[in-house]
Length: 63
Length: 137
Image 1 (cartoon, chains in turn red, blue):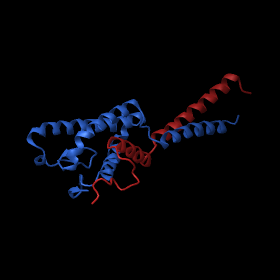
Image 2 (spheres, rainbow over the protein chains, first blue to last red):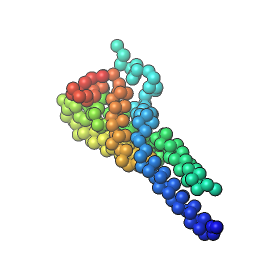
Image 3 (tube, rainbow over the protein chains, first blue to last red):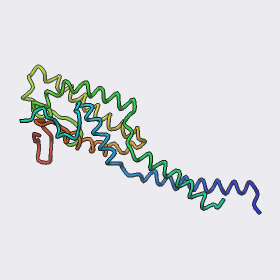
Image 4 (cartoon, chains in turn cyan, yellow):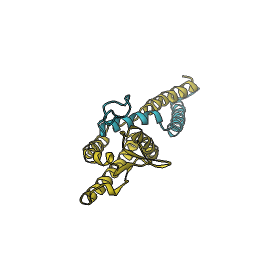
């Protein structure tokens, strides 16, 4: 037989263990390289006021 | 409830939230936007110096005085100040993005990502640093 308190304590332990496990997940998150590249492009395009990146750099100084 | 199931549910839930958070990089914060508009305003002054080769893009996500000779004496101090201010902004930008995403340790990776993208997106005629020294795009 289990008292309510004991059940709660058990659940708390499990919750704690879960948090610890997911903390490992958080710490091990890799650097999102693709997202960083996308974000960088967006900022650079705004700072340099480039229209779109799907065209080769700029047409301005084309021979 | 089965304790194991309970554990699994919590891990899955928190894990899913983490994955969601990592999928994108937050760059729309007041700090980032402020630095961005400061750099945007400065670019009007710097563009001419990129074009004439006085200033080039370094490999570490910064800019450098490449050819002081192509800057009139009277303007040299201005150019140096522009470069210093720009580099300060860039450094702050990389740190700000890292902090905004809760990973200050990502700063150097963000910097190297930017370094590649600045060079990639540089206009034709601008000078960029490579492993072989300065090259013109």
